[in-house]
Image (cartoon, rainbow, N blue to C red; front, side, top):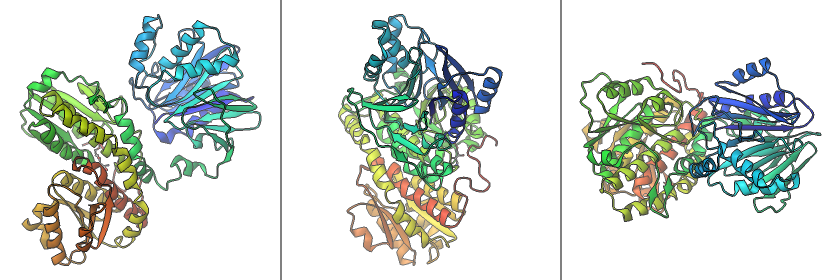
Amino acid sequence: MCGIVGYIGNRSASGVLLDGLKRLEYRGYDSSGLAVLCDGKLNLRRSVGKILNLRALLTEQPLKGGVGLGHTRWATHGVPSEQNAHPHTDCSKRFVVVHNGIIENYSILKHNLIKKGHRFESQTDTEVIAHLLEEAWGKKNFLEKEYLDAVRGALNQLEGAFALGILCVDFPELLVAARRDCPLVLGVGKNENFVASDIPALLHATKKVVYLEQNEVALVRPKSIECFNLDGYRVKKEVVTVRLNPLQAEKANYKHFMLKEIMEQNIAIQDTLRGRLFAEAGELRLNLDLRENFLKQIDRITLIACGTSYHAALVGRYYFEALAKIPVTVEIASEFRYRDTFLGKKDLAIYISQSGETADTLAALRKNKKMGVKNLAICNVLGSSLAREADTTFFTHCGPEIGVASTKAFTGQLTALLLLAIHVGMTRGALEGKEAKELLNQFLKLPAWIRQTCALSKKIKTLARRFIGKDHFLYLGRNLNYPIALEGALKLKEVSYIHAEGYPAGEMKHGPIALINREMPLVALVTESPVYDKICSNIEEAKARGGTVIAIATEGDKAIRKKVSDVLYVPKAPDIFSPMINVIPLQLFAYHVADLRGCDVDCPRNLAKSVTVE
Ligand code: AGP
C-alpha cells in the first residue's frame, strides 16, 4: 500500500518528509520520492528501492523549502522505476501530485489529454491528475480562491479510489489534500500542519489529527486547515487526539499484522475487483494479453503454485471446470519442475504466487516457456520476477502482505481465479451471459459477506482457548471446500505449530477415521452445498467414534447444531463463493490458537515470507 506524507511550516520539509516516510515503511513499497517547493520552483527527488536510497540522494542534492510532499509507492500501474515513482508533475512543472489508490478511468483521461497535446513521462494512472490540473489552469490562470474549484473539477472526473497530496508553484502557502475510498489524515501542529495516509507518519510530530472523510478536500496552510466536500461546501471538522503508540498505529491497533490482514480482506477483494467488474453491464475488463481465439482453441489449463497458493489453485480447478468446461491440471511447482511434462502451444499455464519470487514456481514458468506455453501469472507484487517473466499478469490489489502466513492474498487469488473462470467460460461460450451477469452481481456482495464473517473473531478466540493444548487436528471438506480444509490445516500448522491435516471428507473411511478419538478434534466445512448431506454423514462417523467436531455452517442451519460440539455460522451465500468465506474462520482460529499459545504469529519459526530458494 502506498504511503503519503505532506508538510507545510517553517522547518525543512525534506527532513520532516523523510522521517514520515520512514515510519510508513511497514506498508511495503518499491520506490519513493518527494517534492519541495522553494523560490517558486518544485524540486523533485525520486529513487527506486528503500528510503535510504532517497536519503542518500538528498544528502548529495539537498532541497530547501518549508512545504513539500513525500510518497512511498506500491506499484499498481507501471513497474517500479524512478520514472514511475511519485510525485508526478504536469508538462509545465506547475503542479505536483502524490497518490494512493487506483484511477479506473485513467486510460481514457490520458488519451484525451494526449490528444490535447499533453506529454506524459510515466506509465502511472496518477500522472493524469497533474495534467488535468494543468488543463484547468490553461483555461484560466485561476487565483488561489479559485484553486479549490479547479481541484474539485479535476477530481470529479476521476473514477476509482484516491488519497492525494497536491502542490502548485503559484500557491506556495497552500498544500491541498483530498480522498475517496483511501484513508488520509491531517496532522495539526504549532504553526505547521501535516498530511499523511496513516497515523504512524504523524505521531512523532503531533497527536492532534483531523480525519478527512469520503470525497473531501482540505486546504492546508501553516496556521489553518479548511475542509470542503467535492461539491464545494465547507465541512466542519473536529480535531481528535490520538492515543496510539507508533507500533500500535502501524498495525492499525491490531495486535499482529496477520490479524490486520485477515480483517481487511473485504477491502483487498474490493480493490481486486475494482476496475475489472462491471456487473450492471454483465461485463469483465481484465486487460490481459489473452486473445479470444487463443482461449477458444486451448484444450487444457494447468495451475501451478506452492503452499497456500497451491490451495488456491485447487479451488481454481473447480472454477474452470464448472464455468469454462475445460480440463484442468493442478501442479505443485516443486514436483512439476522435475517431472517429464508435455505442455505445449494448446496449453494455458497459470502460475499463482503472492510474492512472485517463489523459486519453484519461477522454475516451472521457465521450463514451460521453452515449450512455447502461454503463461499467465496471478500475483500480488508488481515488478516481481514472475510478473516480469510471464506473458501476462493478473495483479491482485491486496496491498503488501506482511504476516508470513498468507491470508488476504489467498482470498485475493481466489477472487482472481473466479473472475478468470467466468471470463474464459464466457469467451468459450460455456457460460451464458445471463448466468455470468448473475454471478457478477453476486460478486459485488462478497466484500460484505467477508466483513460479516470477520466479525466472528471474538467468538473464535473464546473457542480457541479450549483447544490450545491439543497436539493434532483434522480438517474435513468436500468439493470446493476440500482445498479450504487443506488451507485451514496449513494455517494452524504454520502459526501455532500444532500438527494438522486437511482431508477430503469422503476419504475418512479409507484410513484417517482410525485416528479419531476424544483427543483428535475435527473441523468440518459443512456449509450449504450439493454435498452437504455427505459431509453430515462424515460428521456422524466421527462423532460415533468420540470425535469432537467444530462445524463451519451456513447461518440458519439449526440441524447441524445437534450433530457437533461447536458451530461457527457464516453468511448464506452461493456455494461458489464459499471458499473465500469459509477460509476466514479457519484463519481466525489458527491466529487465536497461535496467539494464545504465545507463538510469534507474524514471523513463525523456520518460515520465510517468500521462499526464493529451493
Ligand atoms: C502460506 O501461508 C505460506 N507462507 C506459504 O505456503 C506460501 O503460500 C508459499 O510459500 C507460496 O508463496 P507465494 O504465494 O509467494 O508463491
